Length: 313
Image (cartoon, rainbow, N blue to C red; front, side, top):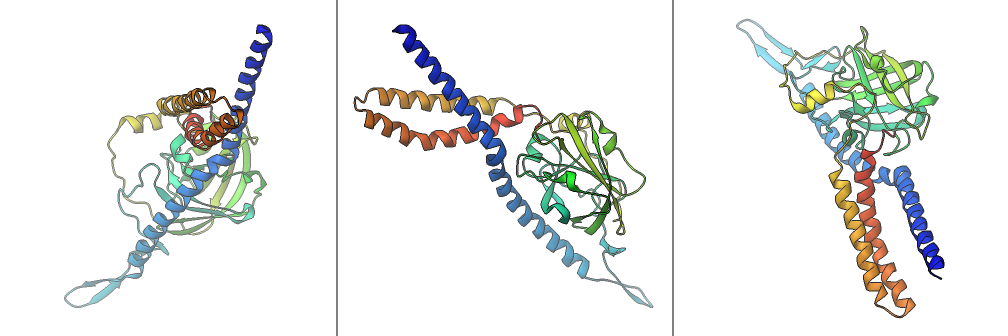
């Protein structure tokens, strides 16, 4: 009899663990998109506000008066806005939008490619060129999670257009080639002599074993580059500079531990309440009422657990 009870309990534990894994998979595939969609809406409003301010400045002429003549100049150069020295977005802040009509992708691009940055949307690699400017502008994006912005990146072929919009203007790139590299091959994001756009994501889908890379060349006039500004060296900047993989950085484990403890405490509490109820219908009702707050806690637990796992785009 004891062996039978033991087997039942072990089976219950295994069933619960399997259900937990299935819920985590569902969160990865669909749940991560909920927070990313929310952040994308916020980022788009923020970027549209910055874009409107930039366009008003470009449309407003500045008049310079001299003793004999009066000249009128604008703040635009070669059809694009002149850059502001040192005006670099902080990590997680919008740098522009990327529009890929061929695969129906239109997202706000943020600064940085840490795990937290890429949960917001496609991220611009630190140290690479600003989109639209000379050099190699490299952008990473998730393939199967967090709204999967680069899910169909493999469908791009040479000649397909990619449009990048920043506060300096709208720039058109055309795809030149696609290639597969290892996650440690950072040569694809090295500086280039010509204005280039490099998009990276995981390959194949649902795996982080390789990286799919799509490169495109700028076909519209490039934007002017602002004067160099020496930024202070911080611990975070050292970590970003020392990264040698085409992926984001890991996060701390403490939030996952805290949310996991909260989930475990709620399960124990529900069990203690239910076991004191002799009627089975009442016990089922207790578990039913506790299901919603438990799912909510699990959502935040999965959200903090996901960045601790190996890179999953």
